[in-house]
Image (cartoon, rainbow, N blue to C red; front, side, top):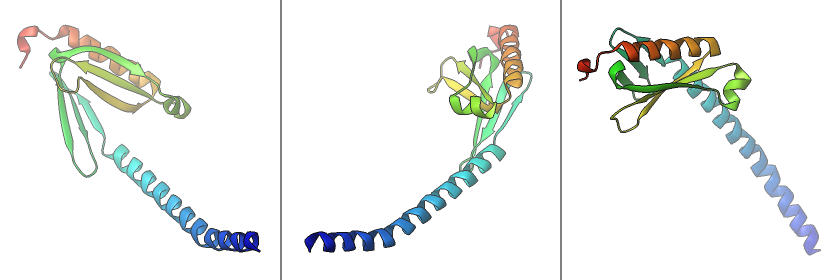
Length: 132
């Protein structure tokens, strides 16, 4: 008798909570997808004569300037998800900042290699007297 009551009670809870859980999961997934698309569309970088300029952010816009004289070294990396999607990231390590690296994500491997080589060239060409 007690076992039957427990089973009926669990079935009632499952009927109410499982659809709610599925709905919440779906909403979180859709929100995550929308946020990922917005982040992708708001990401910009540009190499100019003196620095690497980055602009990103959906709600809060962040602009970062990395003078070439501050560049210590440049890496390319590919996480498992990036490898799955055929993408790469370039990581620029800088001197004298609180967070000493800047990442440029979502590049093709060839584009990441080109950017890494170009940043390396520009960092070497920069005169240390140009430092801010």
